[in-house]
Amino acid sequence: MDFADRVTRVEPSATLAISNLAAELEADGVDVVDLSVGEPDFPTPENITAAGKAAMDAGHTGYTPSNGIPELREAIVDKLHGDGLDQYRTENVIVTPGGKQALYEIFQALIDDGDEVVLLDPAWVSYEAMAKMAGGELTRVDLAPFDFQLEPATGYLKDAVSDETELLVVNSPCNPSGAVFSDVAMDHVARIAGKHDVTVISDEIYKEITYGTDAPSLGTYEGLRDRTITVNGFSKAYSMTGWRLGYFAGPAELVDQAGKLHSHSVSCATNFVQRAGVEALRNTDEAVDEMVEAFRERRDLLVDLFDDHGVDVPVGDGAFYMMLPVDDDDQAWCEGAIQDAHVATVPGSAFGTPGYARLSYAASESRLREGVDRLAADGYL
Ligand code: PMP
Ligand code: GLU
Image 1 (cartoon, rainbow, N blue to C red):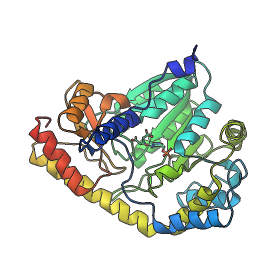
Image 2 (image 1 turned 180 degrees about the horizontal axis):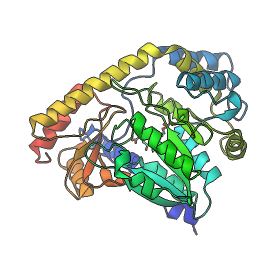
Image 3 (image 1 turned 120 degrees about the horizontal axis):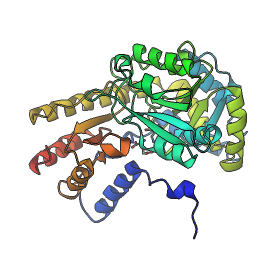
């Protein structure tokens, strides 16, 4: 078959590819400590599952309005207002089957062939693929190791963004570093984006998962209120990866344009899943707090375990990822770690940052201990 450039120019998702490899090894009877995919290991909180079941039983199984049921869009707007994003109304929101689909629709709606998209590295694997599928050209800004913070004084964002830039993607708390960008950093982004009239995606899917700090929402900053598209989803904070539910909020004209893609592709997000989403947003604070506390304990445990082996790791204040410094050839390191030590991690180069392996600590404490022990025993630390 003669495949279109838009698919042949991208690679499969590295995070999902490694997790598939881990699953294959498991199927062959190998016990793999899977620290690859970013998926909370907790069950979806019971009240949410019950709401989904009740919605199904009540017959909420048909199509919904394409952009989402009013109850969910209202709950989303209330949540966004709670984050200080009071520029959004229900007509600014599209509910999607996952945050990924929200991002995909935004890239498709905004990026033409040759348009410049700026990413801050390390950056989540799918931004690059989505930009390329839309025909975009990437400019990648290297955030400084070791903490991968966005430091205004370095000037690297200022140098990368120009009047030619169409879109800037900011993800805080960050996948894969766990970094939470400071108020000063966000203000810096706002100034630069404002100066060059750049649209900004603020991917806030880990916003609820922070330790002892808050992740400011970019759309609250002066100059960014009308040019920020806020993306979020239910997968991480509510442990709802397989339910496939997310959303974006942005200027009404973007909703009109992206809404066409949405209605001609997915039609709508699943009806009873949207109703479970209302329950998640309205009534699930305690369960979220418990999961976040567990993630914090696991992060601290990993830091201590690596320290015991003399390895210093950057300590992020959010999400559930850590960048472990490894060999320059991080691909070979990750392949070796999974084949020899049976510990699955994702090469930093998949995120634009070679020399690191990303670990997801959405795993039990005993599996984290086992993973570090195996890496040490097989000479990977
Ligand atoms: N953004 C980031 C940074 C992510 O890590 C993920 C995780 N897959 C997503 C968006 C999308 O998640 P989902 O489609 O499950 O909502
Ligand atoms: N976002 C998660 C990760 O980075 C899930 C996998 C994916 O969607 O890429 O591992």
